[in-house]
Image (cartoon, rainbow, N blue to C red; front, top):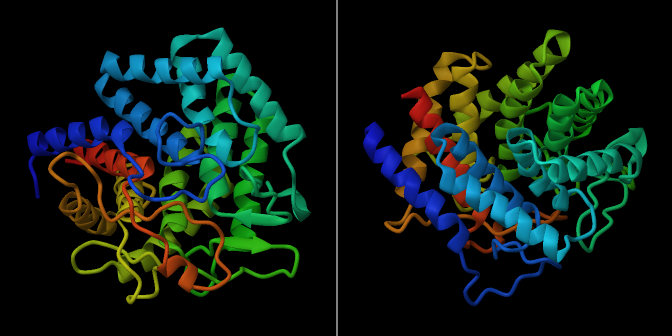
Length: 353
C-alpha cells in the first residue's frame, strides 16, 4: 500500500491529467462529445465534481480558478438544452454558487432545479425519464439518473432550504430502487422500461452500479438523511456491497458485467466502488469488514494509473444495451469520469489512512 505522500503525488497527477484527455482516433457516437473537457455533458460533469471535491480537501485556489473559468466560458458561449446528462455539470455549479455567493450561478441553478421539478419528462410513477442529448428514452429509468440529476436537485434543496426538492430527491431514489434493484443479488440493473416492462438485457453493469455506490454515500451525507428512509437506503447499499465484495477479483478489480468473469475488468467502476465503500465505512454507513474491499480497490486502481496520471482501462460512455454483448464490446479509452472517480478514491484514501 502506498504511503500518504505517494498517494498525494499520484492524486495530483490524476487531477492534472483530467482536462488533457484526448479521443485520439476514436469516433464518438454521442451528439455532444464526451471526451473533450470543453464540452458540456455528463462525462465532463463528473470530472468537474471530482475537481471540486479535490478542491474541498486541498483548498488549492488554482482549482477554484479553473472551475470558475470553465463555467464562465460555457455560460458566455451558451450551453446545450436541458436533460438528465446535461444536468451533471450543474452539481458543481451549485457547490460553486454556495461557496462563492455568485448570484448568476445561483440564479441559473435555481432555474434549472425548477425545470427538473416542473418540466423534466416523467415516466409512469413520476420517475425522471432518462432523456439525454439526441434520445428521448421514453418511459425509461436508468441508474445513471440518480448521480447525474438527483444529486443536483438534492443539493439545491439544501442550498435553498426547499423541502419539496429534498422530498422529490428521496422519492426518485425510492422509485429507481423499486425498478432497478435486483432482489436476487442486491446489485442494480442498468435500466427499466415501462414500455414492455422489463430491464432490457438484465445487465448488472459495473459503472452503473458504481453510480449508486458512490452517489448514495454522497447523497446521504449531503441531505443529512435520517429515520426510516435513511435505514432503507443503507440496507440497499449494504446488500449491494455484500455482493460486490464477493465478486471482486483477487487483484481488486471488478468486471464491466459484474457477474460475468469473461467481460473485461474496468477501472472507473472499480474506483467508484472503492470510493463509496471506503467513505461508507468511514461515515458508519457500512460494516468495517468492507474496508479491506475498499483498500483492494485502491491498490487495483493505482495499478491502472500511468506515469503521466492517465487512468487506464476505462470504458467509453455506455448507452442502454438490449443484449450483454453490448457491454462486453464498449471500447476502452481514457475519460474524464475515470480520472474523477480515481481522484475521489485517492482523496478518500487520504481521509481514511
